[in-house]
View 1: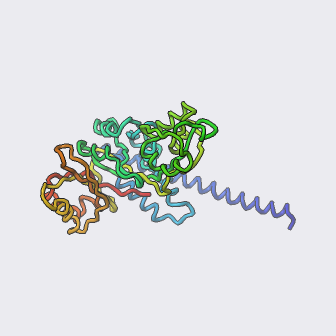
View 2 (view 1 turned 180 degrees about the vertical axis):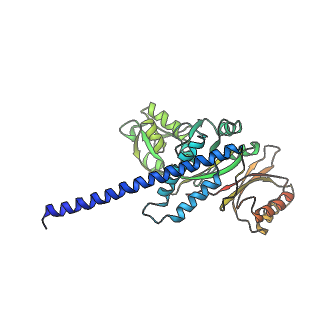
View 3 (view 1 turned 180 degrees about the horizontal axis):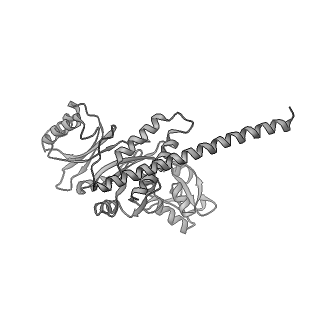
Length: 367
């Protein structure tokens, strides 16, 4: 067969495949529309019964886990989860478009985490400080808030922990976001900049790269990575360390990609709201407690967890701010407060602790 015949056969096969894709696209679109109509019927039913709690964290987590369990490729788990998150986000917006407060300004990793968790069909509200995010949700001006809680390289964010001592808000979910830092700027040569600016955590997470590649440059802290990007956009003598979103938002060049010292650099964020979350089947519970002032107090606090087979995944101590040398402990455990073993352990713990506050039970992060 000559080359022209071979090319004609290939073109015919491609055209046939494209026709099949067009047919599938039509079916997929019809199914998505049917899903949206069912979501609207659920909203109408809730409204007739006097309910307005359209967003159910445990329901969304359950749907995503089923999606991942069914996934046979070739799309990755991350890709298929993102597709379904956006479908759910669009359907939920038909019922009620949510306002999500986050630690701003625009372009921060916290905003990226909010959009990863809730999808693009929400209104994100940037605020200048973590305590402002809490207040925005407490006042009812936002349905939920997103705040950072810990980084795998630099550890816990103490301001967030301290806010839970005073706030009545509940933890409704968590988001884990892989953090990739880039060196950004307006100029043509990153070595001509006089300073590099970023959030103090980001500077710490890129310390080794900066030592090796920009050893003489002054390092300046900013309130956020996005603020650093904004500053660099206005001043050619500055380089900034920030992510993709900030680079696009402020029109900056990327001089170097992924300059974080640890390739697995991940930040965990908490979703905060006013309502308790029902069990999803794979949950985490966060607690705030303090011990009585006596020998072996911490061991006594942890004994009910061990005795009931409850796995503790994190413990942090913070000054209580009530009196000198008194501390409170933030603890994460596997399970939901409605699980029999967890409920039994907490009942015993309440008798032992001087103070116990349930910060929330919520689905573990899905991807």
